[in-house]
Length: 144
Image 1 (cartoon, rainbow, N blue to C red):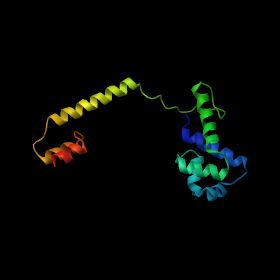
Image 2 (image 1 turned 90 degrees about the vertical axis):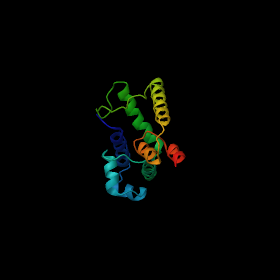
Image 3 (image 1 turned 180 degrees about the vertical axis):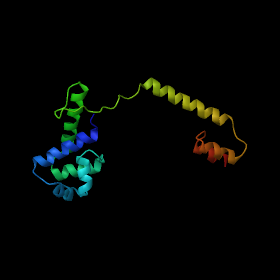
Image 4 (image 1 turned 45 degrees about the horizontal axis):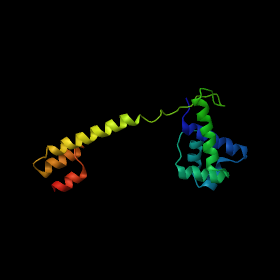
């Protein structure tokens, strides 16, 4: 199974090697440490969007092109085919059903209302309930 960071690293490495450039050259131009760029290419680190944009700038490729290439490999896996490297790609599950998430939100609202209805006698009790996550910051401010 391959992670998204591994696919991204492989794509960046392919692009760099196609230009016959060294890690040192790209890391200097992207203002990224050599070791960190190496870890990104090996799929050990997941770069931030800013760092990824900087590396793409150093490679003179569009960020959208790199992401599209990675996206195509993920799509291949989702169709049940193998990627060009012969690996399977880890795909996150689809977002949960909206109905399930809305019922959880309703349960949370009810839990907070019950917590508010059982009003404590002192500010110390309010703070204690706040630490346990039973009441919000606004309740603590109101009790103070």
